[in-house]
Amino acid sequence: MSKLNSTFAATAKTFNSGNPDRNGKMPIILVPTAGKFPGQRTVISGTVAENEGFETGSNYLVKCSEGETSEQYGRQFVFNNIGKLSAIETLDVINKLGAAKPVEVVANVAVNEEVEA
Image (tube, rainbow, N blue to C red; front, top):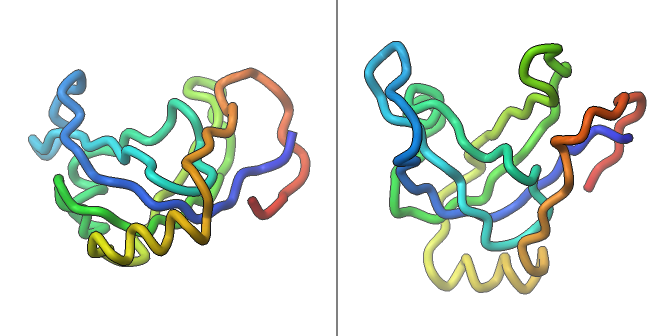
């Protein structure tokens, strides 16, 4: 299995099923609208979201980089906010990146090479 490093567009929304992090901030979920993204792994802590500048209800271009795999939590991903997108920019990104496409990342498979998605 190869490491997932990609760029995708997403809308930041409050993740209502989560609990506040140690700083009391609610997690957010990045709901993809275009490009390849790690399926079932787009929830980030509220503190990380705040530090990256993600605001709920806004659209963003997001860089996804896979880090070291955790024995406890599995494959780990870092999401960097490349920039906020307007409605027109979001449509342009959808045309360039294609429809949102999840990449299976939950299965326990050894990761041994890196590929740009």
